[in-house]
Image (cartoon, rainbow, N blue to C red; front, side, top):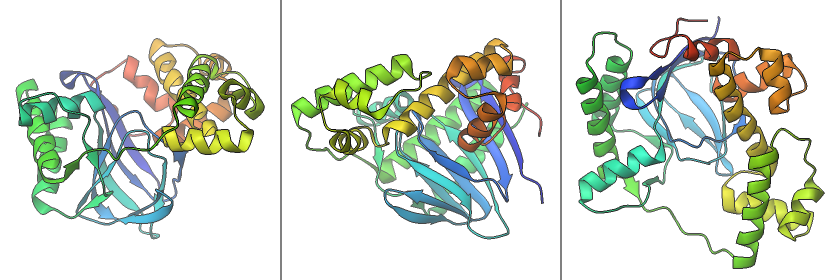
Amino acid sequence: MKDVANYWIDNDLDGLECLTATYYSHRFAPHAHEEFVIGVIQSGAQRVRFRGGHEIMPENTTCVINPEELHTGHAATEAGWSYRVIYPSPAVLSEVAEQICGHSMDMPYFERVVYQDEFVTGLFLNLHEALNSKLATPLAKQSLLNNALAHFILRYGAKRPSLSRNKKNKSGISNAREYLDAYYSNPIKLDELADIACMSQFHFVRSFSTQTGIPPHVYQLCCRIKSAKKLLCSGMPLAEIAAETGFVDQSHLTNRFKAVVGVTPGMFRKLSKNLQYFPQY
């Protein structure tokens, strides 16, 4: 059985990234997103490593990963899983939360990964069917997105738990993070980052993971993938993108990109040619 995925961006929703897929053998590498990951499992089940444990995402559930939360993903059984996913930005959910409350709000936070709620799941399915249709108007898609997110936030949104952080450590990690943002394509070593943060290597890795939600090597990979997405849309050849973003070669880029995004760079490149819909690969 072959993995199949459709990936597209919806310009009517400010570039909302969308995915529908059926996976049997694909395994997502440990990674995190700047955006929320909100999906509906339509059939089968996905198993994820998440917050130090494992979770099963079963059929007919809505599942969510908060921004910058480390996770993996693979089939829970040989039957694989089919799902529909959207990747809304934190700003989108914050705006919806502000509309609900009538005043400025922090980004909503979801304490669980799996929600068995037939009503909410139905809202996201209706939304995704509209997003996947060439007939839905911008007004319809915008209304369905706002309605689904509003009900989800009202029912399950919470305040993000605060972490006690030493001010000195916070400053050091911030400096190391800025260095990774600027030089992600370089073969950065752990002792470099620890020196920038003024910490021991052991203390640095623990502090970085606590403050950002992901270890430094995963953070660097996410920076590389983010940059590769932009360059793919620009039309740059894959081999040049691999060199520009710090991958060993085109094959290395393809393998890591698919392990994080769920589709190949070649498929994602179609974003620059057709920003509405992509065929199966």
